[in-house]
Image (tube, rainbow, N blue to C red; front, top):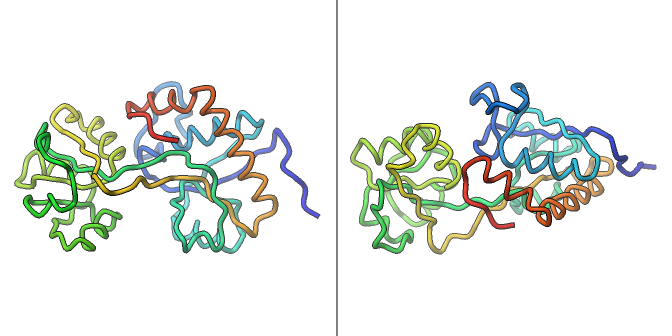
Amino acid sequence: MSTAPIYGEEIVLHTIHLPPHIIDPNIIPPPEGLDEDAVYGFDVDILRAAYATQGVLVRVELTPWKRIMRDVEEGLILGAVSCRRLPVRETFALFSAPLSDSANAFVTRRAFLDDEVPTLSLLNQYSVAAVNGWSQTDILKGANIPYYSASGLDQGINLVLRRNHDIFMTERDSAIFAARRMGVIDQLSFYDVSGLGLDHYAGCFSKKYPNAEQWRDLLNKGLKELNESGERDAIFERYGLPFLSH
């Protein structure tokens, strides 16, 4: 018979480098005051803070994503952060309330689209770039919009600042974070794409792992307390990002 979670326990969740949601400290060193060896990022910070309200410690380990999803499906690990709630994952995983939300955005030179409504159809008038393999490329392909395949965020930003591309379509908060790190935030504008909903990032827990539902419920309880105390917004503010819906 399984035992319910006990306060003071430590759990282990797995993740990948996905700044600013999750950041590998070996790739981007953390700011002063944080553990220099610990995974951080606003999703991880929110997760730890939420569990802390329930007396639970969280250790976050970096693991290749395909292995994480396989191990969650087989019940070999408790779960992962952060997960988008996709139908294929709902067959084997339980999802928490969102840790954060993410919007698709058009990144341009400063004020480039201030007089326009930022819809997908608008892209037919401009030269567009997107990061190879990211979800934005699927959106562009589905809309039959040609695009240049960028290798990453830095290249996509440089394409609109220094090359002949007008719009870089990408994940908004990742782009803001990268632009701040590159020192070019004042040269850019960010427009949430009209007509595309938010992506929600959550904790996901293996349906086959002991007490997974209870660990999910404890996280949800902690997230509710963070919302009520205002601590979630304070975490976003530390990363220089707009407050996200929750």
